[in-house]
Amino acid sequence: MIDNPYVPLLFFMTLGLLFAAGSVGAGQLIGPKKANAAKAMPYECGLQPSPKAEEGGRVPIKYYLTAMLFIIFDVESLFLFPFAVAFNQLGLFALVEMVLFVITVFVAYAYVWRRGGLNWD
Amino acid sequence: MNQEFTMVEINYWAIAPLLVVVAGALIGVLVEAFVARASRHNVQLGVGLVTYLAALVVLLAKSRTEHGLTMGGSVVIDGPSVFLMAVILCFALLSLLVMAERFGGPAADAFTPMGAATPGSDLERSAESAGWGTTEAVPLMMISVVGMMLFVSSGDLLTMFVALEVLSLPLYVLTGLARRRRLLSQEAALKYFLLGSFSSAFFLFGAALLYGYAGSVDIARIALAIGAASPVLDGLLLPGVALVLIGLLFKVGAVPFHAWTPDAYQGAPTPVTGFMAAATKIAAFGAILRLAYVGLSGNRWDWEPALIAIAALTMVIGAVMTVTQTDVKRLLAYSSIAHAGFILVAVMSFDVTGVSGAMFYLVCYGFTTIAAFALVTLVRHEGSEATDLSQWAGLGRRSPVVAGAFAICLLAFAGIPLTSGFTAKFAAFAPAISHGGAAGAWLVVIGVLASAVTAYVYFRIIVTMFFEEGAGDVVAITPSTLTTIAIAIGLVLTILLGVLPGPVLEAATQSAQFLR
Image (cartoon, rainbow over all chains, first blue to last red; front, side):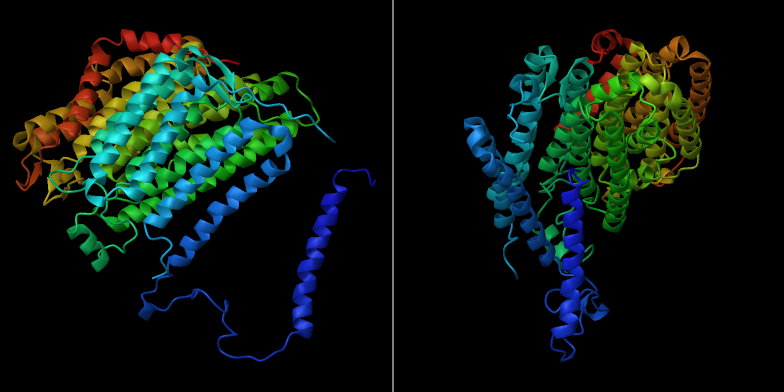
């Protein structure tokens, strides 16, 4: 039974569930409870999730720009990790491929930077 | 657990055309970042033209003879993939010429000055008066072309899925960039995106089921697994086939997965619509052909009836809905649905002549379509496109050249002899009669009847243009040299492929054999 390759998966699922339930439960139990208007909002910082008509009714797009920029680097690190782990076996070819990959990522980054995606206002 | 890492064989000459277009797209993005706004339009046009031409030269000079599997079997270079890649590049070249049309303004006329601005806002007006334009359209299109080229040459379902996304995502953005009728354009983009991502999910789920069945995403391995039928996993096969085919049939706009087509075609900037109709269709049919002929032909008796029904439905509903349209772009969209049905007839013959017939049809239809949509961009009422059919009344008297050219396109769509439409329909229907059995013969009968229905619509437009009196304020404006070249090439090929189909038909026949 323990030899089944899916046992670690089960273990991680259980751990994940326990962690999620545990942190919510612990927050309920031991967190201080001082309610105010800002606390009652869905997000304590960042954008208003239900914008009012007098503000134009639009969700500001700058948060999404930051999020997308984050994803660019997220994806990059996703590929850099296995590359770094297996680097010794891969040799020069993989290094060249990785440099090419990083260059393409930085092309996207350069575009965002030059077109003002990094300016908040 | 310590497995030896074996590097995949990469034949760089085989994938060089793809790499050229990727490089062009990256350069295009860098141009957006570092070149001054005023000169971007010309620079991007130059980058695009050079990229497509270079890719075409590399493809025809080197990759053509590099038949085989490369990248560990995920890219297949064979007759159909080389033929379709070359045609996609030609379509991209022509569409780029139309997309770059400025009509004397500082920026491309079809695209909004600022995609991020609220329609009708001060921001948009100031961008317009500053002469800004969405030059990003050119690199976006190049990325889409990369996806299309990979789509027709992918050897496994995962590569096919990645290619599907790479070709679709830029198209969603391009759809929302029309300069006029911004809200309609944004609505079209959102609809296209939602339904498109839905169909991608269908495809991916089907690919997962087929992986469960065959133990591999390789199209060739799936064929082997079907040949060696295992009764345990048989339950995964048909749902997998159905879901994958739904994902692909969505892209060609086959009924009942066609609902996005008229909205997306109407809302998108007209040059983009032409590109979508011609190039997306050919890419999606390339993938369908490879999957149906290489991967799933082993159990085709199980899914063939469904596809026959879809082909018949596509032709009938496409043709009938064409009759009811009052907007030129919507009408051409429904006509493209009917054409997808005609091509499906060729696909259903399951013979090598069916592959060449479908490919020849796609070539003929694509060139005519790009020319037709380019002509639609010219007919204007107070500066913006007059797409309502009633506005086209009497156009034949005021602008006989444009109306005449559009009439030639319509005759080709109708399949009149001496136009490419006739030879294409012949090439598509003949294999269905000789190899498709009774179902093939019935499909051809339905196809001919549906052609007759659509022919009525096309003749009605010709009558409207030439024999009806119309308001005098709808005129055809004079395009620049580039658009004129694109329209001329489209029209010349429309007639040439109708009179002398031999060389292209021969090329299609010679490259109709899939590498298994």
